[in-house]
Image (cartoon, rainbow, N blue to C red; front, top):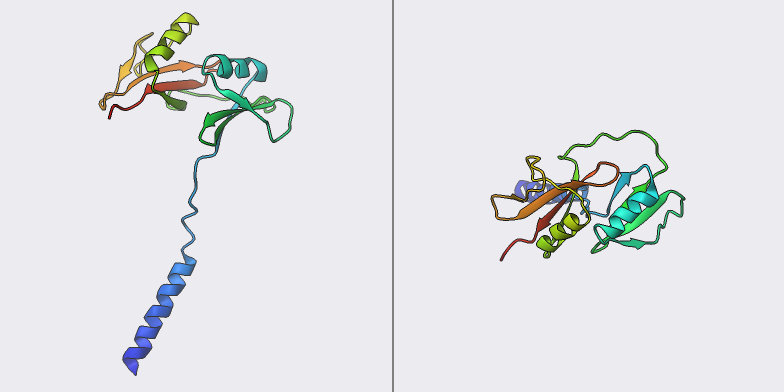
Length: 152
């Protein structure tokens, strides 16, 4: 009888622990928001340099523009908050493309300078895993990384 009692208690306790385990919320990435000075100037940059598609700003607030990053992910540009933002290379938006060399050529044509990860002007960084990457800044000084797709 005592064994049955302990077994029943153990089973009940395990169900109780499972019911209380709400630490996993299954988050997925939704969007990134950037504070910008001039939402129109920044929007032009993201449309014309990166080729992002503008989507409906569901907040319906003036001074905010939304762009698709693909696969349901979004970039929100917000010009209504006027507090200064300090950024460095460690804070960056990274995008990948199978047309890496073509994108670097586009930056050259637009006279947009880029750096490798050490800050060397107009140099491509090659990571240890063979991925090419460059860094450049948008009109507000935010760092962008564009890298190549991994070779399979």
